[in-house]
Amino acid sequence: LIPFVLELTSSFGIKNADRIIRVLYPLFEICKTDTVDLVLDMSSLSGFYPTGMAAVSAGLMHLKRQNRLNIVDLKQPETSNVHDYITRMGFYRHLDLEVEYRWNKRDSTGRFVEIAEVVDDDGVATTSEELGSIIEANFPTISKRVRSSLKIALAEVVENVFYHAGSPVNAIVCAQVVQRRREIEIAIVDCGRGIYSNMVNSPIHKPHCSNSNQAIRLATQCYITSTAQSHRGMGLYIASELTRRNNGSLFLASDDGILKIINGHEIPEHMCYNDGCIWPGTIVSFLFDLDRELSTVDVYNSMGPYPGEDDMIIQSEGE
Amino acid sequence: MNTQVVVQISRHGAFLGTRALGVKVRDEIVKACMDSERVTIDFNGVDAVSHSFADECIGGLLTELGAQVFKEMIRFKGMSEETNSLLRLVTSRRIQTAKMAQQEQPV
Image (cartoon, rainbow over all chains, first blue to last red; front, side, top):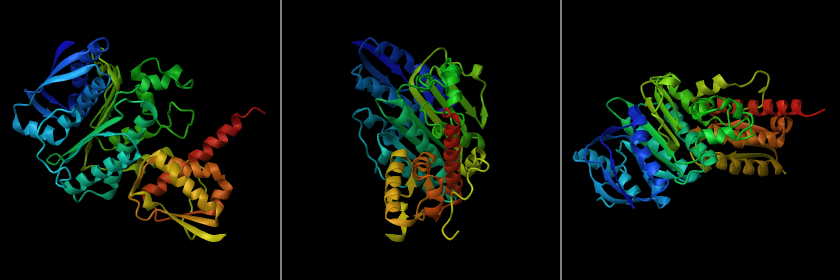
C-alpha cells in the first residue's frame, strides 16, 4: 500500500477544469500498478463546483471499485460553507465517507442537482426532471424552451455515456445554478473508453483521428458517430451547438484531448495542451447563461430537414 | 379493426430522453398500427423530447413502416415547435440515409 495525499486547494470548476485532470493524474498513474492509502486533503479548498466535484468523485470512485484505493483520512474544508455545500451535494456520501448530512434531500429551494451516478433510463429522466425543477424554482420567469433545451443537452450527453463509454462508474452527474450570475453549470463525467478509442474503431473516422484532440473535435460535428448508423451521433453536437449559440462555455476532455469553448468561442487546439496529463474517460461540462437564448429549435433547423426529404412526412391531425 | 387509435405518449413521462425509451414507445405504436387504419401520436403533456428518443421512436417507426405507409397511417397531435422541428429532422435524415444506402447497393 502506497500512501498518497491528494490535496485539493483553492477552487475547481469548469473555468479551471484542466487543473482537475493535472491534480488527479499522478494518482491514476500510481494506481495502475499499486494500491493507494489516500489522504483526501480538502482543508484549503475554497470552491468546489460541479465540474470539479463530479470529476473527483468519478475518479476516486473508479479507483475504489478497482480496489486500487482506500480513503484512510479526510481533511474537511476549513471554510464551513464550502464543507456544508459539499456535504449537501452528496460528495462525501458518494465516496462512502462518513460526514453528517443534515438537509432535506428534496428541498425545492435547492440550487443544485446532487451528485448522482446515472445508471439507466429512469436515472436520465429523474436527473433531467430535477434539473428542470431547480431552474424553475430559482428562475421562475425562464421560458419552458430554455428548461427543455437544458434537459435535452444533459440527456443527450448521458445517453452517449451509456452507448459508447462502457464506464465502470456509469455517468456521474451534478449541476448547480448560480443565481447571482444567472448561470448554470452542469457536469457529466465518466471513466470509460474515451472518445478516441471509440472513433478509431470506426473505419470511416479512423483516418481522420490520429489523436484525442482530433477525435474530440470530430465527435462534436453533426452526424458523426462511432456506430455504423449515420442517423445517430448527435449528442455532443447538439450540446456543443447549444453552448455556442448561448455564448456559454464547454469543457470537454477525453484521454489527453481537450476542447474548450469559452463565451461561445472555441479556444484554438494548441492552447488546450494539458502537460500530457490524461483523464481516463470523458469529462463534459457546460456553463449556460440563462439570460441568453437557448433553443434546440435553432440547432435542429440548422441541421435540416433535408430539401425534398420531408414532404408531408410529419402530418398533424386533420391535415 | 379500429378506424383510429390515439397513442398518448405522455404516459411515459413529460420528458422523453433516451433511445431505450424510444424503442419501447415505437413498439407500442407499431402494435397500434396493426390494430388500426390510422394512428395518432399525441404529444400533449410532453415537455421535451431528445434527439435520441425521437430518432429511435419516430425515425425508427418510419424505417419500420416505410415512407408510404407512414404517410398514410401516422398523424401527430399536440407537438410543440421544438418537437415539430425535431421530428421533421429525424424523419428526413432517415429518408436521406435510406436513399444513400440504396445508391451504395451493388448493381
